[in-house]
Length: 403
Image 1 (cartoon, rainbow, N blue to C red):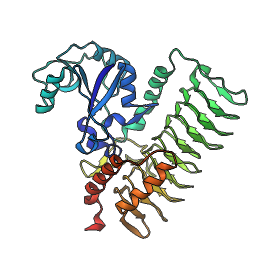
Image 2 (image 1 turned 180 degrees about the vertical axis):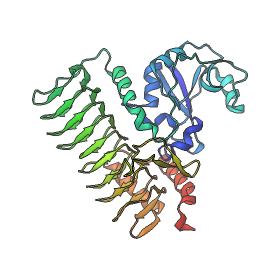
Image 3 (image 1 turned 90 degrees about the vertical axis):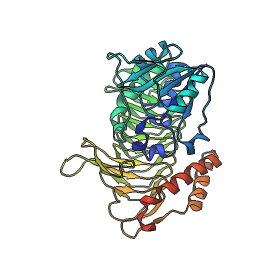
C-alpha cells in the first residue's frame, strides 16, 4: 500500500479553531475527510507532518517510498491521476509551492531538514489541472456542494443502494439517492433534483424528515422527526440532528438535536447545541460579513454575504442561545444566557453576554469530555488531553478577563 504523508499548508493557522485539535488532513468536506479522499483516490495509507503537539496522536510513518502531499488542497480525480504519475525524486509545484513529491527515505529527511524542494526535479503543475485550496474558514461551506458530489461518485461507483422503503417519497433521479445497509427511514421526503443524498450505515431517519440535496448523513447518525435539511449539508457519523439546517457541516458526534436554525456553519466534534438555539447567517443590511481570524487576530473580510458560525471541538451552548452573523466559537467554549453572543468567543470560555465570561477550568473541561465521549463508547485519551491543554494554554492570550 502506498505510503502517503500529508503536511499542513500555511493556511492551517487561519483555519483555527477547526485545526486547533487536528491536522488539516482531518478536516471534513463533503462525505469524507481530506485524508479519506486521498487514501481512496491514491489507494494508500496516510500519516502526517503536523504541529508538534498534534504529532503524538497523529504520528508520521516513513518508508522507502513516500508520497508527500500538501493537505491544504482538495484531492480531485484529475489531480490525483497526475500525482500518481510522478516518479521518484520528482515534485509537482503550484505557483512555486509544493503540491506533491515522491521521495525515498533520505530525500524525505533532507526535505524536512531544510524545507526546500530545490534538490528535487520540480515541475509546475499543468494549467489544465485545477487546484482547489482550502485557505479560510468561510470557504468550507462554499466548497461543500462540489465535495459532496465528488465523494458521492467516488463512494457509490459500481455499487447498488439498499432498497428505500415505499413509505418514503423520492423526488428527482433515483440514482441520486444512496442508502447503506441498516438504515431506518420511513415516511420522509427526499428531493435529489439539485444534488445527491447519501445516508450512511445504520443511520436512523425518523418520520417526516424533509431533505433537499446535496446531503450526506454519516453512519449511526440520528435525524429527529420533522427535520428540514437544505443542502449542501454534511452530517458526520454519530451526530444527532433536528430542526432546520442549511448549507452547513457537522463533524462526527456533534449534537443539534432540537428545533432551531443552523445556517452556513461548521460545527466541530463533540459539540452540543441547546434547544431553540439559532444563528444568523445574513446581516440585516446585507453587507459583507467579517469573521475572526486566529492568525491575524482580527476580524477579516470574507467577501461573502452568507456566513454563519464556526464552532471548535467540544464547544457547547445553552437553550435559546442566539449567535450573530459571522461568529467564531473556540474549542471547549461553554456559552449561555440572554442576548446575542460575542462574534468571537475564545477557547475555554464559560458564560455569556448578560453576566460576562470566566475561564472554563481545564480539569473541569476534561471531566466533561470524559463523560461525553464515554456516552458514545469512545475513550478520552492522554493524547486528547495533551492536545486540549496546548489549546487551553495557547488561548490564554485571548481570554482578556484573566489579565
